[in-house]
Length: 342
Image (cartoon, rainbow, N blue to C red; front, top):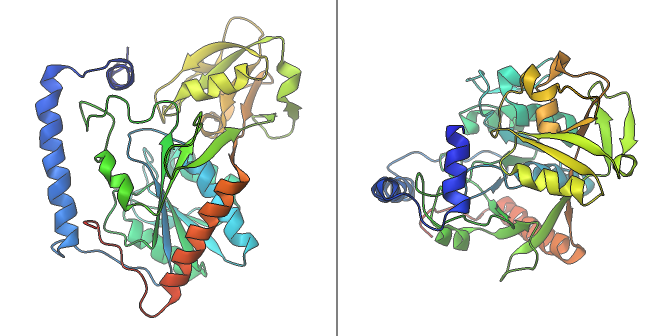
């Protein structure tokens, strides 16, 4: 069992974390409070871009469906006449300085999610550990609104709207902060967000908006062939998923009548040949995030399944109303200022 798998088991499958992790979680909580206070009181610099910023993030470690929602929102903004750009850190990529992505950039350099965003969103994407610097590149290119994929806890970048995505199945795990639990910040942080979107929730909770991820087709790794997922129904496939919650991908395939042989990987893992090649001739289905890293590892048996964020009509209307109001406020002379402490 990898360290990541061990921690996920502690966080999501056990009711109480190991005792030795609890003091570390309390220390982490104190650091989180001190850091937020430092930004709130002006002890640490907050950079405001010349264009509005929308942050789509989460409270927990690992994926909750942020990236598909970023693509969804970028498309909705374009429909309303905006020119959105997307900023992302580029987790596990070797690129450190802020830069705009090009068609030649590879996942090993800039990270898997930036490449996926550039392919799916149709918007300019800037990657960099210094998000304000990356955001300035987008503004200079002509983007009039910046959408940050993750970065809820990156308080150095001022924001005009915060959207928090919650995993509707796993929620907040055991409820503890890191490293005893999966939380980056206390659950009370949700009260500061402009909108909370629950991905895959069986029912809406409070003021949360409902979203699900859906995929209808499989695409060959070279992008030349497309096959409806319905054509895999009744048969077995190897399913590979290196995302925050691989179970979500496996269950999506099972819901379409596909017999799934599970091959979960750690989030953002670099698939190796042994992770993708099996002794039989069964098809291999993987997530799009894994596919951008596979290169020449696959063959005709290998497919990826692109997924889209699907919001209920009422949830979509409510979310866009919140975003529109925040963008309008940001455009006003006395625009809304983000204050981490309230």
